[in-house]
Image 1 (cartoon, rainbow, N blue to C red):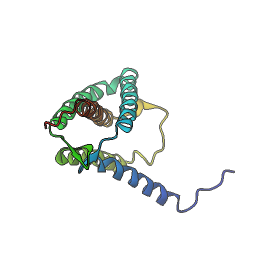
Image 2 (cartoon, helix red, strand yellow):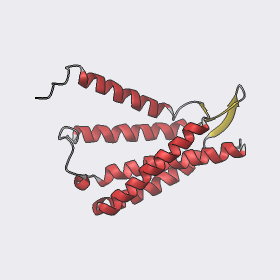
Image 3 (cartoon, one colour):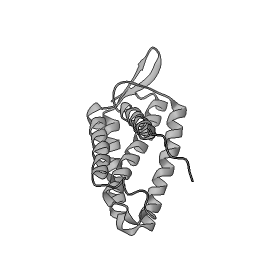
Image 4 (cartoon, helix red, strand yellow):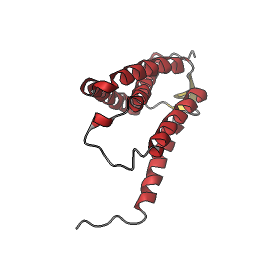
Length: 167
């Protein structure tokens, strides 16, 4: 018989997820120091996740239009946000300030979709047998966020490498 989970485990998991979301959302606000290695890792991970989303769209036909629409929306929003990202230096270190309105809207969208899925009972049923029950809206949102992050990361790398400080 497997050991029972400690009573405090749900609280620890909730706190851990809360911390992860805080860190994710924090990157949308205020001046951010430029870290090229971390950005390169982010580009690699987001490229891998976007490839997985393409595979999901190919193998789960009912989500293809959600992934396509989300990808286009994410690329467009990423380009728009990149135009409104200010490149500057502080104490000789390069960095950038993302537009807080775009970041806030993305954070509300992400948390709102997770709250809706939780309210609808998606997380109380456990893992399904596969992605056959995947929601096109959820994958559209995932594709939008991944493509937005990819465009932002690549765009920032190009702008900061070129030394472009124009907004």
